[in-house]
Image (cartoon, rainbow over all chains, first blue to last red; front, side, top):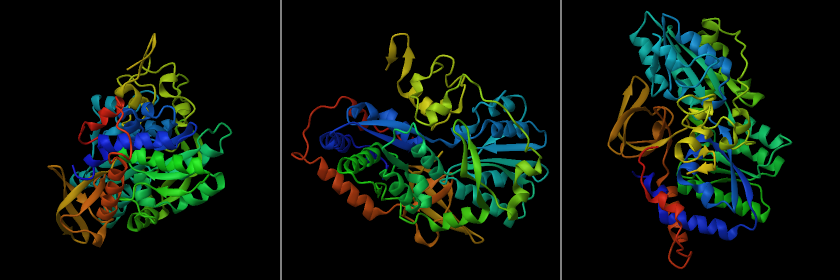
Length: 369
Length: 97
C-alpha cells in the first residue's frame, strides 16, 4: 500500500541500521513515547539490531494502559446498567478492572458495543432514542479531536441520550514527568508522530531546551523509527538538543489547527491520575462547562469510586521505563493476554503485549524467541 | 490507539455542512470524517486516518523527498551489504498493523 510498504523496505532499513552503527560512539538511551512505536520496534526486532548503539526504553504512550482503574470500574458500572448501551474502542474490552472487564460484563448480558469511530457511537444514540448511549472517550491528543467532534455534534444535533466517559490524557506533561524523575535515564525522545500530527511540535521546544534532550517527531513504520533513531543519535553525538521532525509527510510545525480548535472548544486541561504513574498536573482533558450535559460521570453520578491496584502487577514500572516487560515476575506466567493482571498485557499498544506476542516468552532457562 | 493509516480519498460528500468522504485503504473502503482537513483535500488525495477521522493530508513532496534521501543512503557503495539476519524480517509485508 502506498505510504506504508515503502517504509517497510528491507534495503533502506539495512542501510539505516549500518549508518546508525557507524555514527554511534557509545550506547545511547532513547525512549519511544508511543505504544504503537513500541510494537513496531519489538515486532521487527529493531532493538535487537541496534543492541550496541541504542537502548530503547518503552514509553507511557498507551492510553488504554494509563486509564485509571477507577475509570475502568466506572465503565463497568455503566455497562452493567440495563438501559445503557456502552460503546468503546475494541482495545478497552479486555482491560481488567478491579473485579471484571467489559467483555465479561457483555457476556453477563450488558449491552457493550465496539465502535470504529466515536461518530458511530453517536449514530447508535440517534437510532436508539429510548436508551442511554455512553462512549468511553479515552486517548491522547490524536484521538481527542475525534471524541471532541462527537460531543460537539451531539450538542449541535441535540442528541440528549448520548454522553461520554472521558479519560483523556496529554503526552507532554508525561514526558516532562519522565525527564524530571531522579531515576530518569532517557537521553532523547522519539515523540509520537500522530499526536504531533494534531498538536505540532512547538510545545516540545521548551522541554528540549530546559532538559537539553533531543526530541524527534517520529512515525510508526520500521524505516520511520530507524530514521528517527538516526536523527536522535546524530544530535546526541554532536551535543545538540533540538526538536526535529522525521515524520514530515504527516506533521507540520503548527499541527492540525482545525483539530486543535475543536479540542479546545470542547475540552479543558485538568489534573489527571495516570494508571501506574500517579497524578500528573494538567495532563488530562475534561469537558468544558458548555458540554457538561454530555459528561457521563455527572449524568450517572459516578464520581466516587476508589479502588486499589493489584500489587502483583508492575505496570507502573513498565510505563515509566524502569522495568522491561519480561523482567516482571508475573510476565508470561501469572500474567498473559488471556489472563492479564494489567492493561499493558492486553492493549494493542501495551509494551507487555508487544513482548508477549512477538517473541519474548520467559522460560525457566531465560528468554526464548 | 494512536494508529493512523494512510488511504486515498475516493468520494467526498457533505451532509449539511459536515464534510464526510469515502477513503480506500488498499481495497477496503470506509466512511471518514474530513472536517479536520477541510478545504485542503479532493478525490485522489492521500490522508492519514485515525478512528474514522482524517487528521492530515499526506505531503507527497515530503514523502518523495524522504524516499529519495533514504534510497540514496542504501545506494551501492554508500553502505556495505553485510548480511543482517534480523533485518530480513523487514522485507515481509504484514499488511495493516
